Image (tube, helix red, strand yellow):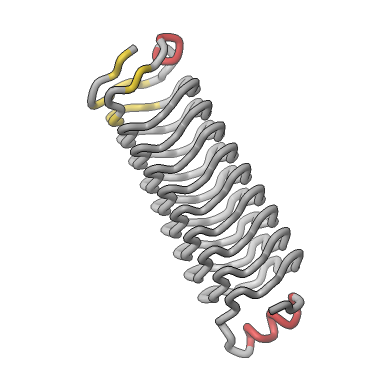
Length: 223
């Protein structure tokens, strides 16, 4: 179903919440409140939802590729298998959102709030997560290759079996994080905090280990 932004908002205001498979490509929906909506498998590629509220919504397989989602609130929403490749998600809110197997390749997530979000199996290759808050998030099996997590908060995060090749964790807080069975070739851990982190059976080069700010690991570390 193809509708323009005005018609879509009119239908929403009238009480319609089911917009499964709708096309809102390039639509301007800035600062709107469309919480509790079903946009599963909808196409919002290159749409603008800056400062919009999409809380507690069904967004299964929804496409937000290259969308402008600055300060958009997705807290509590279901974004399973959603596609947000190349999206602008600066300051976006994903607290307790479900992003299982979502694709956020090359997305800009600077200063985003992903606290307690489920990002297990997510594709975050090349994502910019500088200074993002991921405390308590589930990143098990996620692919963070070439992602930049400089200054990010990953306290208590589970990264079990995640792929971290060529990722940047400079000044990242990984206190009590679970990094069991991770793949982390050419990772930058300069000045990162790994106090209480679980990082068993991982081989790190001496040049990387000596630059870690706080290194108190459970399990075995081989340098």
